[in-house]
Each structure stands twice: as C-alpha cells, then as structure tokens.
Image (cartoon, rainbow, N blue to C red; front, side):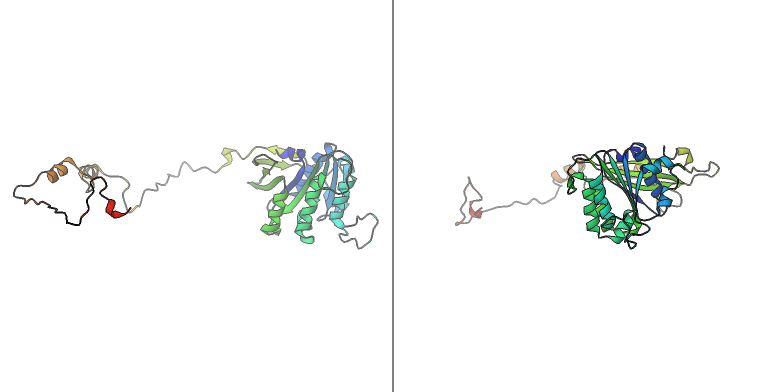
Length: 300
C-alpha cells in the first residue's frame, strides 16, 4: 500500500516525529511520481532548494518544478519569479496552470505553513487544491491531483492536527522499532470503510522505496534456558488449591440455603408433644365479600 499512496489522489498526510523523520519518505514518493511521468511541483519552505534536490539524479531534478519560499518567503526582494500571494498563491496558480494529466504537489512542509498562516485559510486552500472541481476559474478539466503534506505533529496542538487529519484521504504515521522504520497507513475513501495497514520500509541512498517485512520472531528477546523460570504462585499468603481433606469437608457441608429432603420432612411432620394452633376468622357485619371479585373493595 505504501508504494501506491498517490494512485487515488487527494491529500496524503505524512506525520513524522523527532525519532522518525519524514522528509526522506516525501522525497521517495516525489521520485516515484516523477518516474511515472506526472507533473511534480514542490513548495519548499523549510529547507533550501539545493538541500531538497540533493540525492536526486539529473533526470529527476529536471522533472521537478520547484517553488522556492525558503530564501525569501515574504518576497522582500520583489523578484519577478515570485508568485503573488505567497505559498497559497502558488497553490492556486498550480491549480489553474496545470495541463490535463496527473499532478503531484509536495508541501515541505505543512508545519511551516501552519506556523505562518491561519489554520482555516490553509485548510480551505488544501481542500480546493485536492478537489479540483472546487478551484475557481478552472475551465479545463485536469487529471488526478495528489497533495503530499509533511507534518511535524509534535510542533502543533490537537486542534490543527485534527483539522488536517479530517481533510486527508490518507494518513501515514511514521514509527519503527529496532532501527527499522514502519508506516501506519490509514486510508479513507467515500462510501467505504476506512482501512489501515502497517508496512515496514527503508529508504535507499538514491531515495528509492524498499518495502520490507516486519521484524522476525527470532529477533525478539528470548529467555535464557539456564535461568529457571519464576513461579508466580510462590510466596503467596493464601492457597490456590484445596487438599484432599479440605475438598471432602467442603463437599459434605450443607449450605443453609439448600433445602434438603431431611429438612423438608422435619418441617412437615409435627413433633410429638408439639402444640397445634388454628386460625378462626369471623367476618364483620359490614364486610362486603364478593366471591367473584374479592378485591372489589380495594378500588383498583
């Protein structure tokens, strides 16, 4: 599933952390899109263009359209190459300019945009770009649009992260164990149940994606056969099992709520010399006894 993240389009959210960085995976997905012949636009805000292009061969670099917002994010130099409106203006321009065909837009990074733009404005722009029918002024139909957003979620609160998560069609949360990286992929599709999968991978020096299997059972720590196992039932203040005599005493005990046949006979048979009693009832003159409805006087 990791190698086909961009096949369905929409917003793909890459959530990394301090322990597991996500820019390498972002560059691997960018390379895969470029090799598939898609138009690839990079909005570089967090690192320089040279640093982002480092590791790609000349063929890949020639296919990338890089929009540099790292050197002059506010366009103080007033260069003609800068697009009006900053990064969001560049997003809208990409939405209008793109020719028919699949397009991949990589945002490096969403965290930088969240720290410099209102969350609502950014979410509206992402929704408009990832859903091409919402782009104003776009008369020609365009192909599938995939937006790759790198998010350093430890820098933000639950509100912005939750808003971006609700917009994303696919979420990739990076993690790992024992030096091996993993990606937990949550995929949402309209009128379908969300699917999730954990996939192990590694990034090669040329930013190719190498899918791997999870850690084997042999790599898990095992117990030393020379050390005897510890019995958890030792040093207890109570017994977990009954002895033979204790079990016989328990079986022979008659519980007070058990109505045995001997107890029933003793209650039914009067003891010798035991006085018997009788109850006599004489109805009052004003008693209205109705044999058909004895509860008539209760006014129910």
